Length: 188
Image 1 (cartoon, helix red, strand yellow):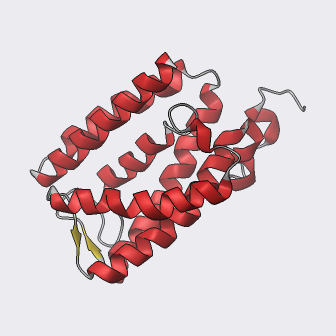
Image 2 (tube, helix red, strand yellow):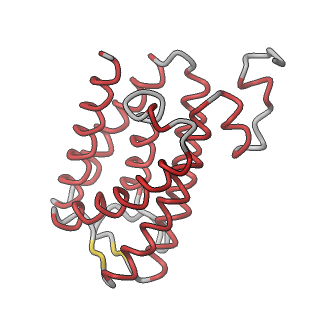
């Protein structure tokens, strides 16, 4: 319970630091805050290898989905762009940050894919809307962006909660990672 509360507070701290710093033209500040939180989470996790792979999966989903949003013209990120057409580094950090909640403060969603999908469809877009209100992003075509975000998060949440539910769940989405590595050589 204590770890879940710390995890929830760390997530909120990282989220606000990243959104506010992006909104004020210094996305690297929030990025650094999130790096500290994610690294601390991974090294203190019961299974650091599994958590690191979960972070990698979340970042790959974020890179894909947020780059699609960017290239569709539905979302604009005022700062943190390294390459044109690719989601900014700070939004990928936020996906990594989100993944740290899946084994702790949001672990109650494990093995509940329909609920995870519903929660993603509702709260994913609301998070981006909050980011817009704080000045970190712009939803250029509001209705299309909100629909796309609902679909993206309705898909991402069950994938991520499934991957978080057990160590071999990540290997289902990261097929290049041998199962033996996830279990430290144990072929369970």
